[in-house]
Image: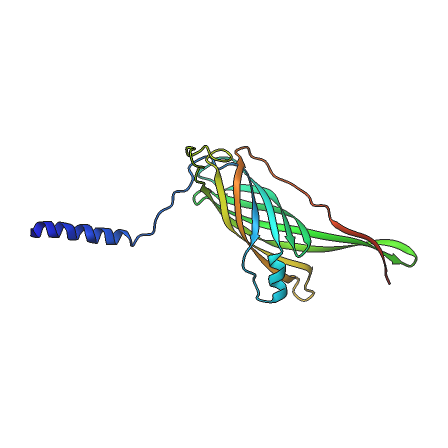
Length: 223
C-alpha cells in the first residue's frame, strides 16, 4: 500500500511541476513568403486628454506588405504600403522592415504624409497653398499559423501556404514641423494601433496604393 501511495505522490508532484512551465505555442512551419494585408485598429491613446482620445478613436489604418523568400536562416527585407486615417486626415505611407525567421517577427518602420491644398487670393492672383502633415512610427507583428475553418485540414484555410496571420502593435507619431531648437519633430499626437493581418497569397509582391490628397477648391482671402 505504501508503494502505491508513493507512486501516486510522484505523479502529483510531477503534474504540479509541469504547470510551472508556460505553454509553448508552435510557430508556422509553412512557407511564410507572400503578400499580406491587414488593418490597424486604434487602441488606448498615448495621452489622456479628451481631444487626443477622440482623435484616436476616429482613426484607423489599412496596410499591405510583401515578404520575400522562404529562408529559415536569414533575415529578409519586407516592403509595403499603408493608409492611415487620423482625425479626418489621410496619410499615404510606406512600410519597410525586416523579418526574423528565428522568431517569425516582423519589425518595420512606417512613414507617411498627408496634404491639404486650398486656393487663396493673393495680390489679385489665385495661389494654391499646400499644407503637409507627417506620420512616423513603428509596426511590430508576429506571424502565426491560423486555425483552419471547420471541416478543412491545416493548410487549406483562407489564402495559401498555411494561412499565416499577422498580430502585433503599431505606434505612430504625428507632426507638422520640426523644432527650430532641436531639429526634432514637434509631435502633436501619438496614435497606438493593434495590428491584425493575414496572408493573401504565397506570391511575393510589394503592395502600393495612393490616396488622393484632400482639397477644398475654395478661394479664400489671403494676405
